[in-house]
Image 1 (cartoon, rainbow, N blue to C red):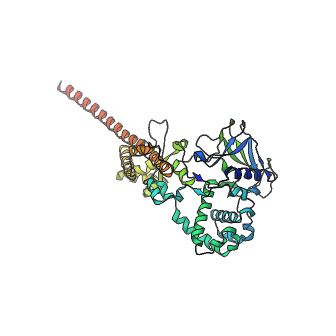
Image 2: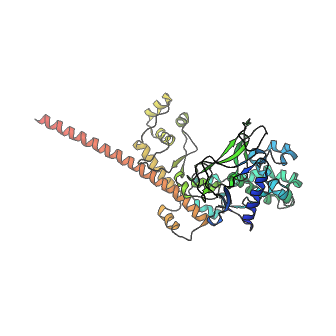
Image 3: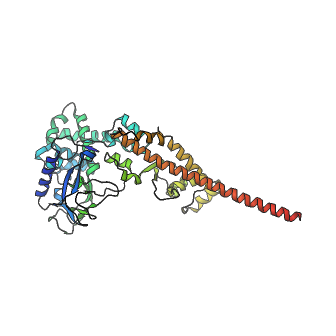
Length: 448
């Protein structure tokens, strides 16, 4: 969830749409409207004012009006600086510059409607993050690394070229320079993570909203006004963003009725990733939840090219048997081979075909999952009790829902591994019983 603190929420939305419609070559359908969705903690969203047909254009914008490093005047004023920065740091620096210009920025009506506060994990306190104990998502936050990068790469620049950064100039040059830089850089980095799009660069021509072919020259990140106002919610997608010729165009991917919200496609992300990147979770993304298992190392699994940093167990619907990652099964298989089998596999060099779980592999999986369960400080039952409290809200509820989703996957996986062991045990018992029966029959025949 993102937070907007201004008291002129709708006015700024209207001013932004007016500005966008006035851009040369841009078009915005009269059938869409920016709605205030703060009551359901969704910031802004796009609502259909009339029925919309499949493939109907919702808006388009020229590449020269996207907020990119190339389009910002900062890249012309200090061009050499950008040769030393990667694309991520470059766009952060440009956003700091453009926000610092306030009304003098070309994109000011757009910048005004972007959120100032976030519920992404980067901004959680250590006490709040403790609610996610056991989840691998904590290791992906990387706040300390980001801080070092901002101080090393950006602080010298905003101080050396202090006068360029408008409203931030005085604070960047003060005793609070580093603190202020970290605060604003984290906001800009979060905006990029949550709102930026990857686009293909072209040769610079643009002719308005038509279907002219383009000459592409690589890709870059861009802030696309209005495109980032379309929310996402699992399988409710009814629009998608296209790069058509020299234009960015949002198109309806299915029929949408008047009054319905229009959702863009941001990919199939587990709720832990939604919380990390965007600061919210949704029940519709529950089907894409994952829980990560740490990796192990062995030369044979390197040869098989199945060694990974970790292995994702995914929520699986409508499956009678839990499907473990093939790479993980092969890694455990390599570790549980006896000496002769191990040497033979190493000599052969071939990667084994997808295999059913052996008793040894299932037993190791059981131990791994039980160990993974212990990394959480609460049980499934305890989390369900906590979530039953209607007064529980905000970051703590989201954290509990994320960790409960991971534990639900582990529980199903554990049941499946144990069921496999039991099935193999029953099979062995049946074989033993058949053998004993055969031996008894043979003994009786000999007596006769």
